[in-house]
Length: 260
Image 1 (tube, rainbow, N blue to C red):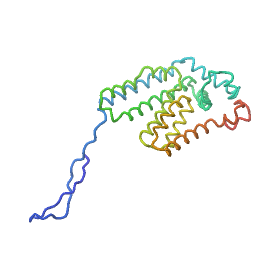
Image 2 (image 1 turned 60 degrees about the vertical axis):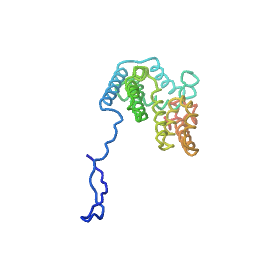
Image 3 (image 1 turned 90 degrees about the vertical axis):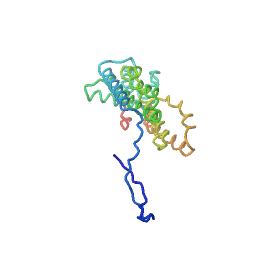
Image 4 (image 1 turned 180 degrees about the horizontal axis):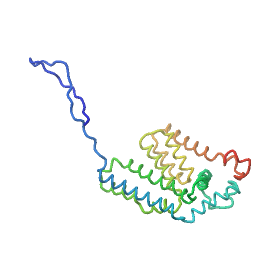
């Protein structure tokens, strides 16, 4: 048990105070944000959901989005970035996603696990990360029963099981980066780091642009606004720059070897 020291005046027999001394008193116990039983229930639900998602990712092909992403990877190798955008209007993702698809293709060729599995693993892990962030954001209100139930239902939400474990969608990863960025803003952390995370979200999908007005107005001052959006822009520029400057080169073109 932790103790804290409190000064107490030491009295002479005559009643006159002498030098101060200290006595040990028990330290106040911190208030738990949620009971142990609720913590176990939430962690157990999240673990069950994680196992089910991984099982689905390993044993199912998924929706046509999975095969479509694989086709994007193959077509990019022969058509280049501009050629891919022109050939298939369905590729409405930022060009930085091509790096991610190439990583999944490398993992498929380097392991015995298929492209469909690797495509869904980041979304599965992102759900776990998003759950933790939501838990932290709602920590001051976890004494409320409805908030605890909300976190528990988020941990085992059937739509997330289907989206991340079966569908083959990149939205959960984008949401993780966006939530992470908002969490750091809420906690008053580095504007550069939170802005970089927002830039990462934009590298997965451009949907987070709708949050820009809210993020801009929520910042404490102009300095943090500039740092935040400068960091976000830097991440996007660095991630997109190979495609910005070599748009017309296919992946099998020797001139593109420096970035593929």
